[in-house]
Structure formats: structure tokens, C-alpha cells
Length: 269
Length: 240
Ligand code: HEM
Ligand code: FES
Picture 1 (cartoon, rainbow over the protein chains, first blue to last red):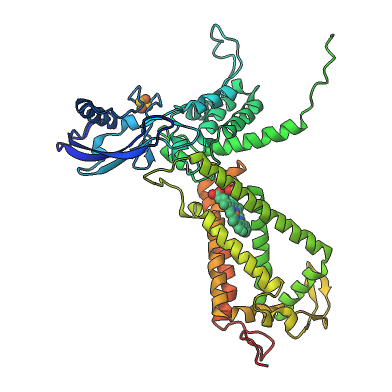
Picture 2: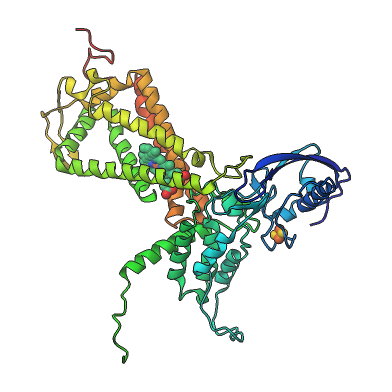
């Protein structure tokens, strides 16, 4: 992104959620930060605040980050009530201080969901997503050398749609933004990105049922179709994938009820 | 939620279409009411079916809301909504008002516990002037003595408090349906961005038309455009 020529530095009040550990009682603490370059990223601003805290001998604010370029999904904080802060289609690491005005009070808190317990300050444990993936977010295929690329034709519209779903970086902003802390957008994207492709057909029914059931068991909320998830998603993944997953789940459940099963015994035993 | 909601939407629209017969000759609404009561056991099948739909709808809403509150855990210190519509955020509140309305409504027109002086069974019987037909079949004969539902409705709405309560409750029901109608397509997996705009328009027009139809009945009574057949009976308790 090309930086705007914004000359004036700004001062802000940072209202941050501080919580020592998973069981500790957390609270908001205010920090003043002066003379910030408007062109620094939100995470760089947190680095500056943390430098000051360290010099003063206070524990720095714990926050998660890795790539700092919007592709890993590690950075997770809710800025002024909005997961990943203001701006469409950006992660926290892509938010710049020029988005704010001099003198602003900025509230920063962790993603709030019972299924994402707080580890420390702004860091949450999002391994619940891994458990959903382990329930069905894969295909069974022969590992080893890559298969011949043209052996399995994929229509272009299907490939595009599957790619839209596959842009999910698993950051958890959909859960954080949802009024009910529901994981439907994440699961919808993961179910669809394999379910749309020919490689994903063999396990399609099993996958959608297993992933949805695991999501429910982990204590995520229920979708009320308000679409806060797709609005907060740094990859702008569409809630159409939720509708598609609902249809897939319904069809899979109905099919499962009528499916003929092998009686066993045949086949030369 | 979606399936029971759809059943209830079907019911409220059918109910409104039936009620709009109040604007026709009293034979229509009274004949229609008589016809429904003649269904006997079938009427009870429909009533129990609706009751089950309402109970499941409210039960599901309660269970889901409790689960959703638990799923959030610690609430946000800074609350913010990006794009969720007002209708979608008010579903619980509008649902409560609709439930309160439903209870009053049944006490009013079905059981006669509210405004009993103008309850259909306490009004003089009505003699059908013409035959009442449903789908071309005669169901209530001319000359039959039936309950005067037409007058009961009009006398009931002559009380401005009752009429206003109806108007507000039905307005909130229309608002509830604005999200509900749209939402059920998503729940059933039948919505996508390609036609979401069209669906929204259909939902909006449906709810506006539904509200207009329901506003018309108490509105017309309040404006004095509809008057009861039984002259001399007023909404105020009769002097004896
Ligand atoms: C009687 C009291 C009622 C209560 C307490 C109530 C409550 C609720 C609640 C809490 C929801 C879920 C909102 C959400 O998804 O965010 C809902 C959805 C819905 N309601 Fe009601 N409701 C009531 C009556 C009605 C009636 C009378 C109708 C129809 C005539 C109706 C139609 C719907 C529909 C279609 C949905 C959407 C279902 C879906 O999205 O899958 N409701 N209601
Ligand atoms: S740090 Fe990787 S997406 Fe923000």
C-alpha cells in the first residue's frame, strides 16, 4: 500500500485489555503514546508502546503476530470493537496509524469467544480451529510425486470459487465479529474449498457432518445470518459459503438416512 | 427456526387474507368464521399444529440464545456492529412483543376473556343474507344464524388503546419477518449473493404489504370507515 503523505505525528490513548493468564481476571488499562508516525502500522505502534513499558520496567503487552503482511492469520485483536480494526479486507497488521486521529482513544481487546480462551493479554488460543480441521478438513490421497496435472479436469468457475474459500487464513475474526461467536464462516470456507473440487467428493458428506458437529461440540455459537463475519474477514470471504454449507449439511444428513450399506460377507471371505 | 418460521409466515399471511373480508359485506367474515368452526376436528388439527410450531420456534430461539451467550463468554468492552441490520438485532425483542400480542389476541377474539361485553357470543346472532362459498362450494346457507364476528372485530377496534396496541404489535411482527423471511433462505442453503438483493426486495415488499393490510383494519375502524351492523352496541360496557 502506498503511504499517504501525512506529515503530522499523532498522540493517542491506548485502552488495552491486560490479563496475566488464562485464569486471571483481566481489566482495561490506559497508556498514553505520543509522537507516533501516522505511517507506522498498528503492530509497530504496539512495539513502540511496549518499548516504553519495558524501559519503565513494566511487563509489555502480549500480542500475537508473525508475517505482518496479512497472510498468516496470527495477529488477532479487536480494535474499537471491530476484529482487525477499521478498514475492509485487512488484518490487524495491515492497519496503519493514519486511520486514527490525533487524540483518539483506541480500545484494544482480544478476540472474545469461549472457544478461544485467553492465553495472555491480547493472545488467544485458537486451537479449536485445528480440531475442526482435523475432523474433516483434508482429502485422502496418495502422497508422493505430484499427479499429472490434466488427469482431473476442474471447471474454471469451480476452481475460482474453491480458491475464494481457500483464501481463509484461519485468523478467527469471523468468530470474534459474530454476535454469537459462531464459527460458521470458517467452517463454511473449509468445507467448501474441498467440497467444490473433484478431489474432495469422496469424503464430501462425511466431511461436512464431521466438521459441523465438531464445531458445535467445541462450544461455538449458532449463526443468526447477520453477516458480521464476512464484513470482518480480512480476506472478504463471502457468507455464501455458509449457505452452501447449510445445504450440503442438510443433503448429507438426508442422504445418510437413506444410503444403502453393504451387508458384508460377500467378496470371498 | 426456519421451518417453524416458514409455517408461521404461511399462517399469518393466510390469516390476514381471511381477515380482509371485514371490508366486504358482513356475510363474508361471518360466513368464513362459521366455515372454520364447521371444520370441527380439522380446526383442532390446525390449531394444535400452529401451537406446536410456535412452541418449537420459541423453544429453539431460547436454547440457541442461551448457547450463543455462553459462546461469547466475556462480553466486549467496546461494542460495535459492522453491518448487521436493526431488524436482525431486534429479533428477540420483537419476538417477545409478538408473543404478548398473541396471548392478548387469543384472549380477545377466541376466548372472550378481554373485552367480553363485545365478544361474539354476547352479541345478537347474525342471520346470513346470502350463501357463503369457499372455492365455489356452498358452505354456509343463506338464513343460517351465525356468530357476529364482523361486529365483534369492529367494536373491539373502536377502543383506540386496543387498536393502537394491534397496530404496534403487527408493525413489530412485520419487522420480525423482515429478518426472518430473508434469513430462512440462508439457513436452508437457498440464498446466494447472486440473488440476495432480489430476495431482500421481496422480503421488504412482503413485510410492507403485510403491515399495510393489517394496519387497514384497525385504521379503518378508528377513522370511522367501518361500522358494526348491530346498532346500539358500543365498545364501552353496556349500561344495564
Ligand atoms: C411469539 C413469539 C416469537 C418469538 C419470541 C420469536 C423469536 C424469534 C427469534 C429469537 C428468532 C431468531 C432470530 C435470529 O435468527 O436472530 C426468530 C426467527 C424467526 N422468526 Fe420468530 N419469534 C416469535 C414469533 C414469530 C412469528 C409469529 C413468526 C411468523 C409469523 C416468526 C417467524 C420467524 C422466522 C421466519 C424466523 C427466521 C428463522 C431462521 O432464520 O431460520 N416468529 N424468532
Ligand atoms: S501477522 Fe500475519 S496476518 Fe497479521
